[in-house]
Image (cartoon, rainbow, N blue to C red; front, side, top):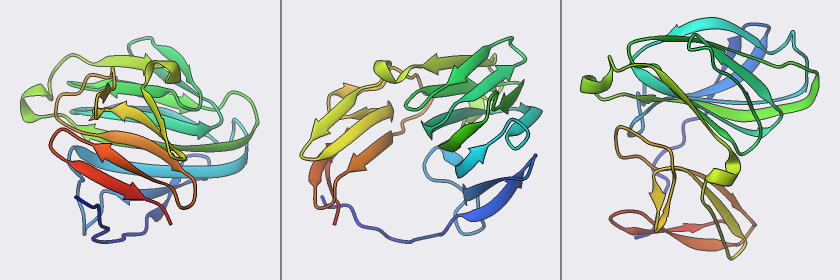
Length: 198
């Protein structure tokens, strides 16, 4: 079947500590969630200094926090004593479960920080599980190249290409880079969806 756009909801500007601007698409009054995704921030700023991007320790419970970058590097630290630098194409997948505290910061001045942070809600019977942190380098994630389109499978499956990231509910999370005029077929578990750029 063909994919169609049903509604466009522009993300709203939100401010993080240090006057760092993010654009929040979820949650909102008109749309509380998309499948398992309950939160989505997009950020893209030039000339990032450690003072501008320094998110202090803060708690999470009952969900999974997913960080994915296109440009720049961010250091993740948490109450489980994990310390992990994330680079473009990598995935930080943190399961808060019954509770975890984490912080994110830029260590050195960078020409650009561009990425996404999303939250995946845990099913009710998993919200009190033990917290965990997993880092997946980009080389561990399937990459599909076809007809001017590159698709990195962040989570879930696209046809026979399955992400190694474990999830507690069915979901599909793809990074799609497509040239103008290209097209491809996306095979999910129950249907073939056509993705076409113009």
